[in-house]
Length: 143
Ligand SMILES: [Fe+2]
Image (cartoon, rainbow, N blue to C red; front, side, top):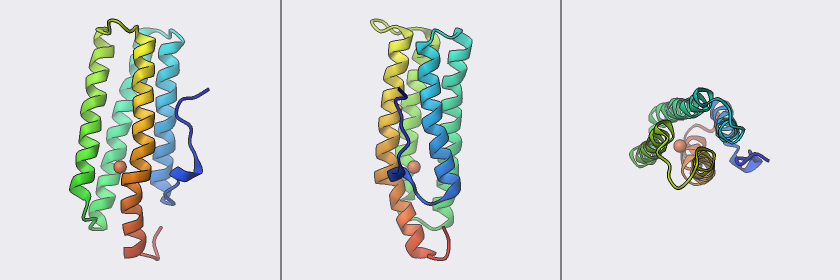
């Protein structure tokens, strides 16, 4: 069973953001599955690299959107994004280097996936919904 399960309560109503959030959940699950299945190392590492790249791309989309609507919490939100990227990249470095004692790669990948899935679920509901609500109040005619 996938770790990161999409749910209607993550729906922001903004098409591009919802599509990206769904894709992030998928990327987390794919990465975890790749390490668990004992997929070739390079391929497993690529699934994690994709997750890191796509997370960054998604954050850039969100930050541009927040900037466009003049969201007052932009800086705080950006800091949450930056903190997550720092943590993901640190975990990625560990996995890439294979320096994981006492966990093996699959266990560590599962730990990264759990952490990312949990972070994403909370971040969407607590932080993202803030700009969604603000955008709705500001521009009720827009999604
Ligand atoms: Fe966000």
